Image (tube, rainbow, N blue to C red; front, side):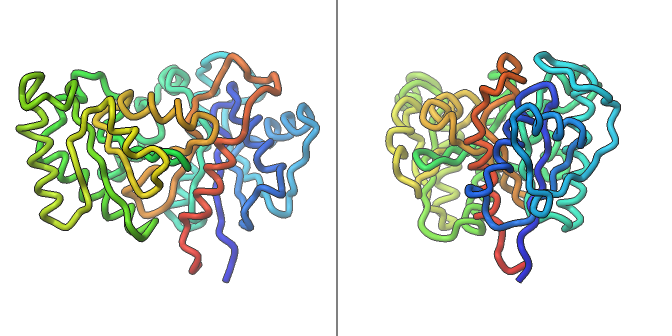
Length: 315
């Protein structure tokens, strides 16, 4: 049996991506037994090694040199060149995953602003993946709490407009299938309401009665272990510390505020609904501490571990 091949992208070169990648990959004792392909510019990786006083084991970590417009490292702010480079790292690594050259993909954080400056129209990794895989789902995993987002990176008004019986049922089907495939065993979905007190029987909004509850009933009729809708201010307490419980949050901040409070330094973003595993840290490029040797690599390290754990062993 060959070792799993895990691809890692450098993220935004102007943020903490290069720092946390080098810190994580240099910590040999924490790495799963795998082959690592780092999609990056070698000069940026080597600069980080010198700056941090660390050295990557080139027998385990192979740098896949990506041709980008960058000729020098510019840190600490959104930048057109950095946006173009980070997108190229991701795009070529994705092609490797699609071709089966790597078994899972770990992406360091990028900047939506830098992508926009570079003329890249997507708001992030998941939006680009959703174009190729319409069933792609953004989930967040940790020992304390697991959350699946029905919608993400949308204005709130647009997010609420997508809450329909059919949209929710389609989402539940993809989520249930992938969670069972990747992590077989008992799991339960706890669906949050969208209105205060989950609508209070229609007194504070009818989305729960008209769309969310019927979709849950449909899903339950198909054999899914699913409950709700629960008041958004209590549903996360129900799932906290219960690894088999997954909260379905109906929009970005509803799910990410409690998740990041519970697991900011160790949480992992996992994209489901695709034929390969993709994980990433649950934080952004952190320009304010870029280049200062202050970045915590735990979330990226956990992203690598989870990618390894979820990758099928029969390779």
